[in-house]
Length: 258
Image 1 (tube, rainbow, N blue to C red):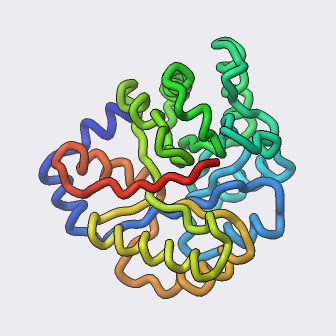
Image 2: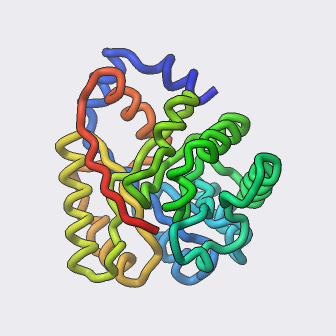
């Protein structure tokens, strides 16, 4: 349904209207659900429109409910097998050890655990997102529940976007991690690069985490935005379809292995 909706909306006139609008940035806060104090600080920041919540976490369900009531877009931050550090995945992870039936059951349980989910992005996943078969399984499951996919792109070898495209599933790929290096200087640099991409391409997508350093930078920088609109991920999907249909923009995705 989502795929048909966006296909129906795309036209030269619609896309020209979108491109005349203020540049757009979708900022997604990941890894939510474990630390109520930092989670609530992230949610309360002005302009935060997208919350990616880990399943089976102490505060996940209530955060999704409160975020939804505040008009935030809720994503399932789905744990996926990584090349290393898999002890940090947490419950509900998808892995290559699961057969087709178990894979589907694990995904459905995770999706049912977080209410109001509109889309899914991967938590870690530098191993699983390179597996074409498992990514095909995942895209079929997302279509089943009418969800979009956001590739966090924790590895340059990810085939998730390719499989989403083959499945005719609405998808996006993140452009920047703001805080892979947790220093104010690095976070500010990534923030500025995100804004520059939004200005030059018309839109950009950045992922951040509720780290104290990140929250401090965003608390300072978000109120200063004047020429860029902060939007939901779903609102970028139409812009992405315009880019794909009419060739505007370039891919600036960067990979960070997790």
